[in-house]
Length: 130
Length: 116
Image (tube, rainbow over the protein chains, first blue to last red):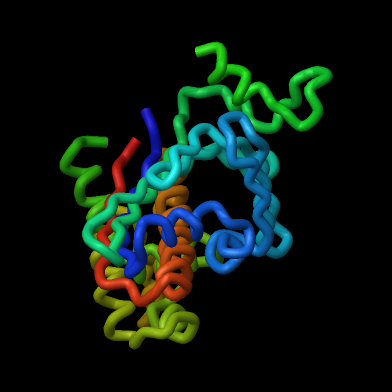
């Protein structure tokens, strides 16, 4: 079972511009967090800072320009998964859907460092093995 | 929790103002409608209407002392999921409003929540 929220938003922007807003660190700073580091590859590290709050996580999927999925967790809190999907509606208009889920049955694997792997955690390793 | 009850709860939480009220009440002690109206950019009448909806969903308890009615968040097993949905939903509302401002004015937004 899972806690889940979903939001849908129609953006007045083409899908390429909307994708840039999801992936460009400068643009992410405008809306997602004060500072965003997002390594855009599956298993890449992710770090988000807003004021005092820091979230660490990792990237699950990067399918330009349609889907970005990552996991994040505040220190000590259970990790949740964010999936953002873009759908081209017509020229200059894109639907953005964001789903954040907190899978309660999963052991929290984000932030537990893999031995000898630098910043990598068990999360991506588990995904790669699946 | 029955399906019906879950539907009522998540219906009550679909409104951003009600989520804000619930977060304000979850963060502090029991409060009156007048105190809540002072904290939020809405009238006391509107606060009362939203408090009634949250109470009907079983998310708030009323406590009467003389002429004063105070509201507090109902403690129950669902409250962890409810507060997660209220908090995370509120965060995305704010983020997406900023994103829409960055990319151009938003023309429509829909919401949805699901119980665990």
